[in-house]
Amino acid sequence: MSQHHGSYDEEKPPAKKAAGFQPSLKGRALRLLSQREHSRHELERKLAPHEQAPGELAKALNELQARDFINDDRAIESVVHRRAGKWGAARVKQELAAKGLSGEAVAEALAGLRDTELSRAQEVWRKKFGCPPADPHERMRQIRFLITRGFAAEVVRRVVRGCEDE
Image 1 (spheres, rainbow, N blue to C red):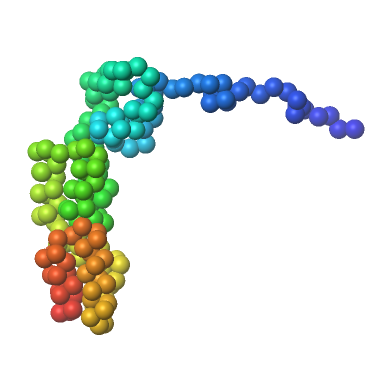
Image 2: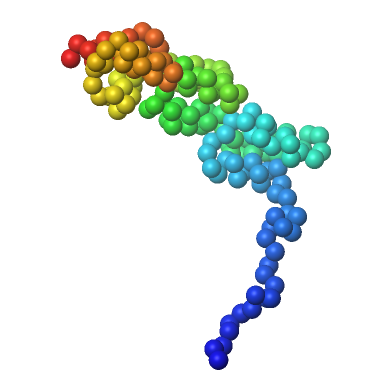
C-alpha cells in the first residue's frame, strides 16, 4: 500500500477574499496604478463605490498624489505612448477627455501628435492595407478606417490619394 502524503481533509489557509478581507482604498488604488497609469479622475470613478466614509477616498488619493503615485502628466504620456502608433490626435484627445485629463499638458501632447499625424496615418494605412484601393468602394473603406482611428480628414485624403499616385 502506498503512503499518502497529505489529505483532502487537511485545512488549507483560507483565501483572502473568502476570509472577508477588503483592501483599503489606498490599496485598491495602488493595485490599479501598478497595472497602468491612471488619472485622479479615473481613480475617483473606479473607487467611489468602495468608499465607506465621506472624504475617505479624497484623503487616500491626496496622500498618493503627494507621494507622486498619481501624476496626471504621466497619465497623459502613457496614453499618448500607447495610442499614438494606432490612433490619430482626435481619438487620443477623446480618450484623454474620458480619463478626465485636460489643460495645457494635454494641449501640448496633442500638438505634438498633430505634427506627426501624416506619417503615423501613413504607417497605419500601410500596415492595414499596403496597396492602393482598386475601386471607389475600397477607397471609401480605407478612408472610413482611418477616420474612425481619429485621423484628420485632410490627412486621410492625403494618405489615400498619395498611395494611389504611387
